[in-house]
Amino acid sequence: MSSTTDASTGRAQIAARTLRTDRWWLPPVANAAGLAAWVIYATVRAFMQDYYYVPEYGYLTPFYSPCVSTGCVPEASHFGQILPDVWWLPYAAISLPFLLLFRLTCYYYRKAYYRAFWLSPPACAVAEPHKRYTGETRFPLIMQNLHRYFFYIAGLITLINLYDAIEAFFKPGGGFGLGLGNIILLVNVVLLFAYTLSCHSCRSGVGGRINHFSKHPVRYKMWTFVTKLNTRHMQFAWATLVSLAVTDFYIMAVSAGWITDLRIVG
Image (cartoon, rainbow, N blue to C red; front, side):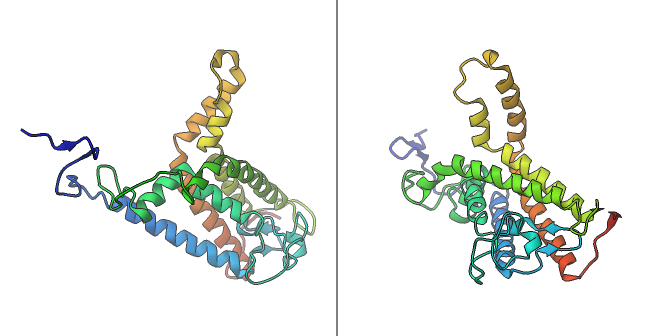
């Protein structure tokens, strides 16, 4: 029997694109549909510039946090108003680009959209249609190496989301309040922290450059905790997309008067 492998190409020399008989195309199609739907929704909401704040209960959607445009409702501008109010500039234009870059350069999302949109490769053991691949060594993919820096900024923005969630427990008119919106905001922040802390850059930063964990027991415990989160990074990545959309839609619905907030206290 002759060899089916050509060392010069490094790939099996078979006529078929793949020998897989399962529905290998289903995950990339589902990923493409899910990511496209989320991007369309988020883009529309970011430029809608309305129904982002509930003044009665202090609910601020994370899509507009921090709200730093002069067009923002003053009560929603927890960190001042420094951007001009123009239709093509989102109210949270300071944070949104960095959050987008953090997710675009995320190790899991790279796998998801490389396979879903670029077919590079579409699935394991399935040949990609591209004749050559230069890796992440040229523009624009070389920008993927900036992921760790976007991680730092995303962590700061997540802290701002936490501040917004805590602030919403104290109604603008005074007094403590608790409603379904507060619970949704808090769950969203917990998931955002889980996604951010499970990042590969976070794991590397916590446990990297240590030759002997026994000499660094605190960092070892931190690294162990982050490692456990890291094994669920994919799940947290999708869970946060869902929680962000649900949180935003709920606040939009309450702000627009489509539904009323379910109040528990106050």
